[in-house]
Amino acid sequence: LFGFKTNRVSGYFEPISPSKQDKLLLPKGYKYDVVAAMGDVINEAGERFGDGSDYNAFFPIDGSHSRGLLVNNHEYTGIFSIGPVKDGVLTPEQVKLNLEYQGMSVIEVYRDEAGVWKMDTKSKYARRITGFTPFELTGPARGSSTVGGATTVQGTFANCSGGVTLWNTVLSCEENFSETAASAKLNDTHYGWVVEIDPFDRTYLKKHTALGRFNHENTAMGLSADGRVVVYMGDDKKDACIYKFVSSGKYDSSKGRQNAALLEDGTLYVANLKSGKWQPVTLEAVRKVIEDEKFKAPAGVSAKREELLNKFNTQADVVVFCHEAALLVGGTPTDRPEDIEISPFDNTVFICHTNNDSHGNIHGHITRIFEAKNDLGAAEFDFEIFAAGGRQSGFSSPDNLAFDSNGNLWVVTDISSGSQNKGVHKAFMNNGLFVIPTSGPSKGQAFQFASGPVECELTGPFFTPDERTLFLSVQHPGEETKDLNNPTSRWPHRPGDTKARAAVVAISGFKLG
Ligand code: FEO
Ligand code: CA
Ligand code: CA
Ligand code: CA
Image (cartoon, rainbow, N blue to C red; front, side, top):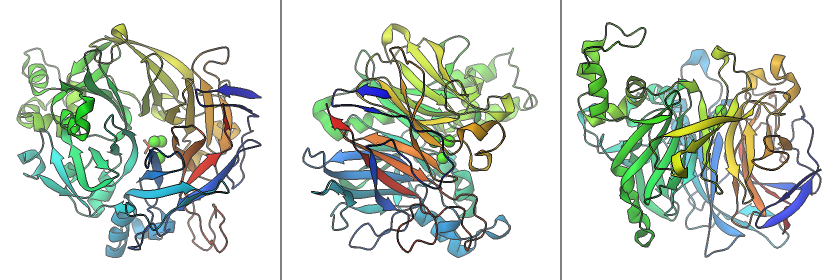
């Protein structure tokens, strides 16, 4: 039995065992409601919920814990939304569907008198944001030649995880954008950004270029000791870096959403894990490295000094080609940094390094950063491996993280569909949701709370403020399906369903503390 007590709820659960079943399994006493699944109508205009559900954020309406707006990211599509892709080339109709099923949804959800969470399709707020929705660029790349002079761009897609800002908006992260941009013949410098939306205002849609362009996983926002906004970000790619953005100006809670201007002006840093220093990713720092007489270009680009000198001439160039700039200034390549969360207790920063098979890091690990003097704005840090994936800890390939109010980490796993239930991953079976205490006798140990259906990953854990409900996405169930007549999963198994659907569920059963 695993006991937990947060500031809001307390209870016990009997950890479940890994499972291969095509079910979302939970401990005894807990249940889930499917709130919205791929293709469901979300509003009176007839717009439909997207595919590839990932990040969730819940915004109470009028302070309610049982009615609010739920923002969900739609990361990618699959055979169930756009159909089989022949020879890797999308038809024009599939290109359109691919852009429509990605992006984000804002839906209104409520818990009815019987305790069942449902979507309110009569909501005045419910809407889709897709690969066609116009976004305004902010920051150094706005209007620059590096992005073809663009000040507004078409749509958002590949929206993986995200974060909530201190001013009650959502940051959503464009991760694996290249393929979708290429298939739709869109300019790929317009994607790979952190986008901001306001769930309560459909006219507010921004892409903040000061936060860099790379395979963004999520954002974790906090404040430095002197009141500046700090945003931690991972670049989910093999051998990619950990970043933090520190605003020039200070946060002022009385200014509400106007604080978003802080994300347009500041310094982007990359972590050097050898020196324990945050290195500025600025034009000045990049040029200094390239122009140095002793410059030795990294392996493979040794003949490219001239090219680099031509490439990096403005801060727009630096943010657009961020990964390359970060490596030049000393950023340390890591094993696919996924979600990052700031501990609400001690300002330490937790990072999931999901895995990197080219380094033999098959089960991944969770890194914990200790900023100097506990100041998120610090220029120096130390770090430890907080937990390593593998049989001993009980989890493999950690991905998204959420803290409860007592410092337990809720961690979902992402063993890729093709590797599940096989080889070194066999014992872990389907992907799951685990609770890992960050202090006390069970620190670093994983207790399994959920097991997902076949070939899915669980994503986007997000608690309501009273912690009685946990929203969770079930992403890509049945992903290995090749034949629509013979799907490998039919989850969520609603009456009449002939195929699997990505969906958001509301888990309840947590007892008031
Ligand atoms: Fe979309 Fe990095 O997972
Ligand atoms: Ca994913
Ligand atoms: Ca992820
Ligand atoms: Ca992942």
